[in-house]
Image (cartoon, rainbow, N blue to C red):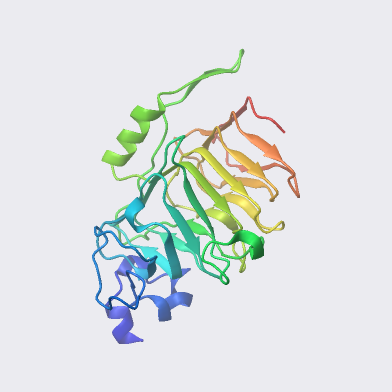
Length: 293
């Protein structure tokens, strides 16, 4: 264990990562094939699926040339490292796996090339959804790096609204560029399906003291019914998202922060529980505008 731990950045040696320590040292890419047994860098294209698991020690980009990405073991993004998922990429999550982010996750698709993060349902063919079921994989989690590391970057959208009329204004392209340049995390034009299993608190989990992570045009669907589709203990900005066939969006701000929470222009359908739960600290404002329930 001491040998393994010495290879892991200190920002990952805290809960919830310790339970996955046996997976940390392994990073496999691309998938083995009969024609080649050599490894390739993450910037190279591959004819076979790329397989991943373990700690990303350097900035990493999952590109369309590498899609579909197969996450065989949980992936860890430590402090100071960014994982970028390019538009159009499909990520296939194996049973019980997660993506744990203490650094930065920049997953920004486009209206015509969305990012899909879903179950790898196994045989007979990779990506075959016939046998996929809610809770096949665990979660994407964002965690505070801890007191001995730099504080998380609070990425925010510059949103303004007329509370009387409900009109909302924002410049999403400029905001996403700013978040990218300042090393923040953001999910846009992404779809998360069949997650929330294996005792995950939410298919998308943002821990207390963790970063704020804007969600723009994100779909979360077909998750385990008794698991929150989003569980946030930080301020949360949800704009233009869709939640269906899953449980609640749970927003908890246990202490005041100078970041406004937004849930706006989003759709909630076939929820197994209340669509939104709020547990707010004093002076922690949240605006809920123009949603469809």
